[in-house]
Amino acid sequence: MSSTARSRVDRAALLTGARSRVAAPAVNPLLPAASEAPDPFAPKPLDPAAVTGTAEERLAAFETAIDEAKETAATSLKAARARFVVEAGTALRAIRDEDGGLYKVTHDTFEEYIVGRWGMDRTRAYQLIDAAPAMLVMSKIFDTAPVESQARVMAPVIEAHGETAVREVVAAVKQSGEKVTAAALRAAAVRMHYIPEQPAAGPGAARTDDDPPAEHTPEQARALVRLEQGLAALRGAHRALRGRVIADALDADSERGKILAAQVRDLAGKIDRLTR
Image (cartoon, rainbow, N blue to C red; front, top):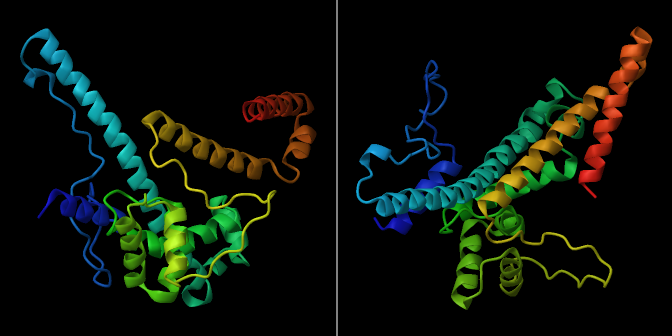
């Protein structure tokens, strides 16, 4: 098997959820057996004791290890984000559709469920649901993990025409010599009559579904993840403070409540300044 083929197999295994487990739970005969696979994110540090040679040679060896670690971080993050789309989107679809809506166990509507349980708005939830099937297929085709904008473009293709059509669109873009971006995939799908042509946007229209940068530096990738984590934390804080929380705290202990409320305002102001 070629290295390219192996990378595709490994990536497909990653996206379909093959995991190593620390302690295996009791076997459920109704569920398929879990696949045993090495942890793709397990660190592989260079053993200093194994590095020999002159000071210059040892320095070069360790610097090479750092370069490789940075490349691995960027690649692993991209694969992890693709895996999130597949796994979260598939699960959200099941929660929405199975047994008339599993979300009804805790919430009246699916929209209330995704906001209340996950701090996620309706648009984002449906983006994940729609992109998951195409992302899974494309992970088996691409040499690197696909990005979500590509999967969203291919979502209507796989829904209406199936996996073969997605493969044909991707192959057409590659054969043309173009970079496989969301825009190139959309154009090819239109040419092949798999999706209708979109009307041209007006001069002031907002741009949507633009490709993110094809490659991020590790620093940029970490910054994006930290921003997403911060946003999730802020959504949680907002939920915690809604309603009469602050008013009731002031009634319970006016002095302490004013101090805490002032700290909330101060922190909100700092966050506002950071986003300008």
